[in-house]
Length: 363
Image (cartoon, rainbow, N blue to C red; front, side, top):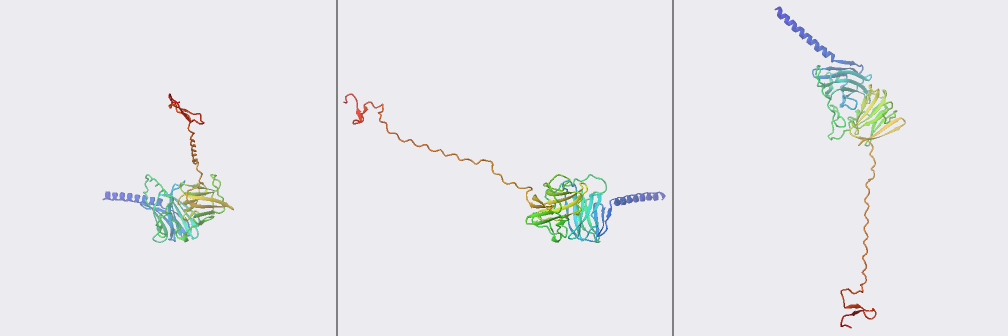
């Protein structure tokens, strides 16, 4: 009997150790940051096959959400969504570094009031975004967690060759148009974001006019100057301002028929404020600077200016002169000579005798 009890005690001890290890692993993968205000906390946790991000707020209205693929020096995907009627007391950067999630950023947007959330992910996410059942949080679920044991990382899928990612419509989003051309990407007019600090855009006919107030930009490689460059492969017009420009808040502007949207964020790695204007297709643009303000006029079309047509270098064929026909020879007067074959005729003296017959027996 004692032997049986000992076996049961050993089994119970093993089970308790295993249970405590499981709880410890779950605790290690359950991290959060307290913010305060209308968004009290951001929490990250894991289940057996998913990652969960809880944004604790009383607002249940998810305005929009979409995914931006890796571009240029950015090697991760960015899942972006907005929660309306809520705000954070300051810009939040929450370093998670668990599972597929790197960092979570929150920043305020205005007109109307809302919070922009950016989640950095090392894969193209399969996700759902919805309010929690108790209405106290917005829950982002990222499916496909590979467990806690190390494994060979899955290669990052190659981005689609399309010009820009198509935002996944949320339940409240405007239905996608039936045509396949680029959509206006503006959604509900009341939720269109056209301004962030000194940066704004407006449409003028078929031209998107983007104005950056108080900054003179130049097309240069000098890293100490505010500058811009067209990255034709990514179809992005990028503006870089050295240092942290406090006039901006991390976030984005809505798109229109020319641009897919404008993403604004501060890069600690390069210590610069980066503005990325993402376009649907190739563009033609002009820039002008007036009173310290820089204005971009952007149209859809082939990047760069179209050169004026040059005259053809092939010489025009010179018509060959028509040869002048040689004048026909005038008929000459008949010769007055006598053919040598005629033996019995001689010319006369020309006055009274024209011909004279000569032969033996003829006088």
